[in-house]
Length: 285
Image 1 (cartoon, helix red, strand yellow):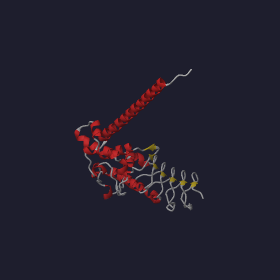
Image 2 (cartoon, rainbow, N blue to C red):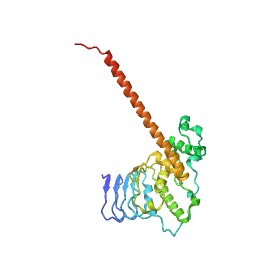
Image 3 (cartoon, rainbow, N blue to C red):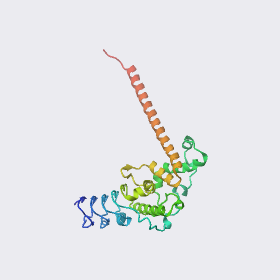
Image 4 (cartoon, helix red, strand yellow):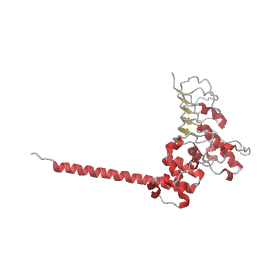
């Protein structure tokens, strides 16, 4: 029984005749594939590498949503892009004016520990906004496990301020995110060196903000700070993102200081203990 199949560099143009139901890893990189197909039966597949192929459209990768155990997906170095710029689609309701997860159940400053609120002084008009997102950070694991509609993109910039081309790009990234959110176990994603990544501004922030289960995105490890910063940037802007970044940086500094102080106290107590033992020792000639 083969759990791994490596078919890279074979000039494959069509995916077919992959019959091993128990396949765990499938490498189809560096071929001439235009569409991911005939893989829906691979229910145990965890890693799919289709990098360096000829995939161009979201429609051509939709079958990945049926791979229920997929955790690693490599789509890098393809030609995935939104449609022709002069063919702007109408945006569906599912990508308009979504509620912010942090404001659905509005948190107040009293819900944050008093010492956390007192530790960071900000202007009053920004304080509650920043703390809402900081509260999300504190309760991160609880928040991302909440049941939610996978067909909704909650974190995005103001659509009303976009021109038609920007809306088209936005609709594309929403389609892409909705597809990826259907892959429940997805942890590692590679999309670098696809045209849409550079043509759509803040692609990385959109992916990080809306697919919180991703652990690695294009070789970068995603931490919960990254998710919160991406979300507040998309909903509020760069100023609020920088304010929250200052909070995270200060917390890291304080944590380091506390650890250093604890370690210093540990060494001091150990030294005192050894000194006391030395004084109490009986010297025998």
